[in-house]
Amino acid sequence: MSLTLQDLAWHQALGKLIETLDRPTFWTALTRLLGQYMELDSWVALLFSDGRPRVFAECPGEDGGPDPLFQDYLKGLYLLDPFYIASREMPQSGLLRLSDVAPECFEQTNYYQRYFRFNVVADEVQINVQLDGERTLCLSLGSEVPFSPEQITLLGLLQPWVAGLMRQRMAFEREALERALPAPRWQSQLEATVQQMEAPLTARELEVSRLMLSGYSSKEIARRLAISAETVKVHRKHLYGKLGIKSQSELFSLFLQAQG
Image 1 (cartoon, rainbow, N blue to C red):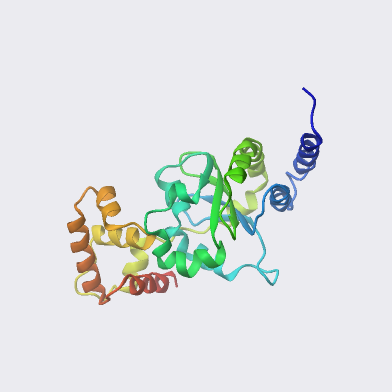
Image 2: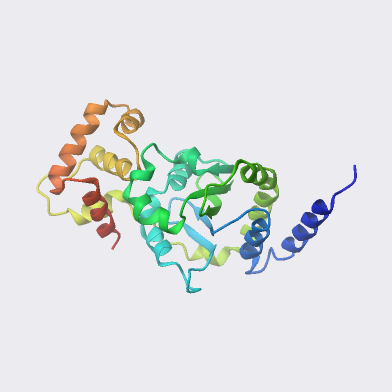
């Protein structure tokens, strides 16, 4: 079977990309190549682990510098990211879509309304490479419009090539790995904000609050924690009472304060 001009162009571009594996321009070159086959509006290459995400490269902000919204993500908003949560709970290699990992009420969360739709805009996919039990290398691709089935199919075909290069690139990311920051823990963050309370939050109340902020409905929380939906509502009532708040928006504001 003969090769088409498109086949030849892809293999030629791939060869040039391989030559950049040991250069700082690798991630930009990789996303530019993918951008020839699909519209991309944002991207970031990072490592999910027990610590804060370790960023290798990201698309620049509108002024050419670091995106301030993404800096908020790194300070702690990543704890509410469906892709981060999935990497901790069900680590796996492959192509993941937002619809694969987002909880039922994700678009109603403050995280979505105040961060995701401004930074990622509409849709996101990730090519994941599971390095070991704790570390997931990710290339996140964002779009202002939902990715089409054709684009997802194409990404699925390209994913083995891209994942192989991503894995090889790790040999040249030592500096970024050494810069990694320790993870802020949800419990210590929130407790630091409400440490003067006479009745401290229980571990279950903290877990319910995290799941609520991540976009899980009461039924989803009940299923994940093996409790009834009514018990979830009781935990939420006690949580709000102890914090002196009346809404999830106020809870999200406390979460932001805890980032410091």
